[in-house]
Image: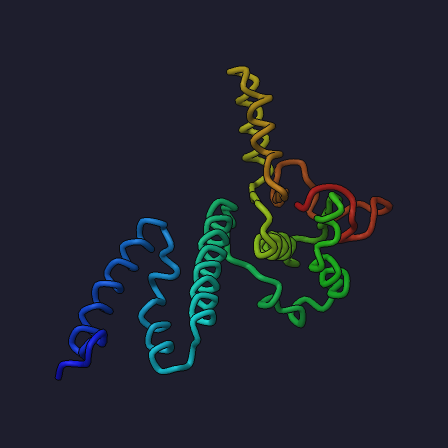
Amino acid sequence: MTGGPGRLSTQQKETLMTVIDTALREHLRALKLSGMLETLDARLTQALAGDLGHLDFLQVLCHDEITRRDTTSMQRRIRHARFEQQATLEEFDFAASPKLPAAQIRDLAALRWLHAGESVILHGPVGVGKTHVAQALGHLAIRHSAEVRFFKTSRVLAHLAGGHADRTWPRRLAELTRPDLLILDLSRCRGYPDHPQPGRGMPWSRQGGVG
C-alpha cells in the first residue's frame, strides 16, 4: 500500500529504520559505546512498545553504558589486585570463629580508615581468618573505586632487596606505594610469631598497613 503525498509506506518505514539502525550501531562502535550496543535491541523493543519515550530511551541507554564501564573497571581493579581468593565480608562465617571481634570488623568495613589515610594491622593466631578479612576489605575498597594491591610480605621484601642490586629500589618502592591500598600478608614469614606477645596491643588494632 502506498501512502499519500509526503507519507511513507510501511515498507519504506522499515527500510528507513534498518538504515538508521545500521548507522547507529556503527556510530556506537566508533565511539566505543559497547554498553549501549549490547542493550540496543532490548531498548528499541521497549521504545517501539511505547514503554520508553525519547528522553527515557536516551537516559536508559546512557545508564547501560555507565553500568558496563563501572563493571569493566571493577573487574580490572580486582584482576590487578592479585588476590589469592575472591573473599568478601558478606560470605565470611563469623559463627565459625566466634572469638573474632565481628563488631570491629564491620566497623572497618565502613572504610573510614581508608578515606582518612589511616592504616590497619590485623593480628592474631594462625587460622582465625586474618588473610580472608584483609582481602575482603580490599575487595570492598575496590567496589568503592579504590586501586588495591595484595602481596605476601616476603615477596615484597625480596622484590625491594633486588632493587638494591640494580639500583631500582626507589622506583620499586614508588610502584608499591602508588595504589590507594596496599595489603601485606605477613603470615608464615620467618621470624614472625604465630601469636602476638603480651603487652603489644589488642588483636585487630588500627595501627599501621592492612596486613
